[in-house]
Length: 319
Image 1 (tube, rainbow, N blue to C red):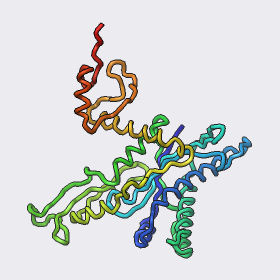
Image 2 (cartoon, one colour):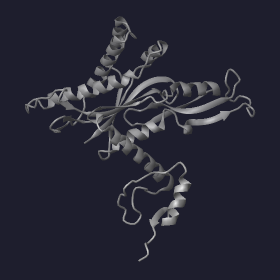
Image 3 (tube, rainbow, N blue to C red):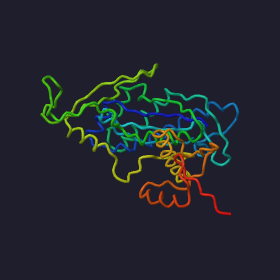
Image 4 (tube, rainbow, N blue to C red):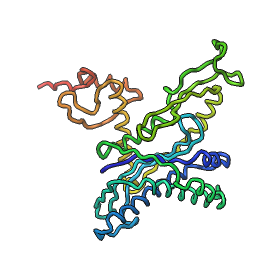
C-alpha cells in the first residue's frame, strides 16, 4: 500500500495572530487528519461512481499518522502538521482496498484553509469577520506539500519515528558560538553585548527542483535558549496521533518503531545490521535490547557464549 508525506502549513500572518492570542495549536493535528480523510473519501466517490460502489466515511477509512511542529528550523513560531497517510481507503469490515492513483492537491489546500478557519472561529480565536478576511485573502487555500514515500508497508512508521526523533532543530545547524572573549572588530554580536549563537536554517525550497536555500541568523545565547525551551512539548504530552486504520494496534506499532530506531542507529554508526545473522544474513528474532547496566549482562553472557566480531555465540555443550 502506497503512502504519502503531507505537510499542512498556515500563512505567517495567521501564525502571528495565533501567537499573539496565545492559542493552543495542537488542535491543528486533528483538523488536518480530518481534512485528509474527507478529501480521500470525496475523490473515491467520484472515481468509483461508475462501478456502483457505495462509499461512505462510516465504512471506508484511510490510515494516517500525524504530529505537530510548532516552529520552523529558524526557531520562529511556525506551527505546521506533518502527516503520513495511505493513498488508499480500506473497508472496515471486508478489508477491501480501493487505491487512488492521484490526489487532488488544489482541493486539499482549499479544504484545509476552510476547516482551519471554521475550527478556530468555533474556538473563538477568530471572529467571523476575521475568518472571512483570511479566506478572501488566500482564495486558493493554505499551502500543502506532498511527498510520496517509497518502501514497504512498514517504512512510513519508521520514517515518521525517524523524523520526529530528529526534532525541530539539529546541532549541525549551529555554525558558531561566540562568548565575546575573542571577538574581532566588525564581527557579529548581540545588541545586548551578550554571548551569541549563529545558526544556519533552511529559508526556501524550490518547488520544481527541490533545491534548498539557506540563511544564517545570530542571536544572543539566552534568546536562543528561550526559543528552544518554548517550543519543547510539555512532559508526557503525546505528540503523535493515529487515525483511521492506524488507530488500532498502537502498542504493536510503537514496539516496531522502537525496534527499528535502535537498529538504524547501530547500522549508521557501525555499518552493521544488528537484526541480521552474520552467517546466513536472515533476520534474527529480537529478544531484548540492553542499555542500562549492560556491562553486567555482557559479563554473564561471556560465561555461556563466545564473543566474535561483535556477536555472542553459544558455547558448544559437552557430549
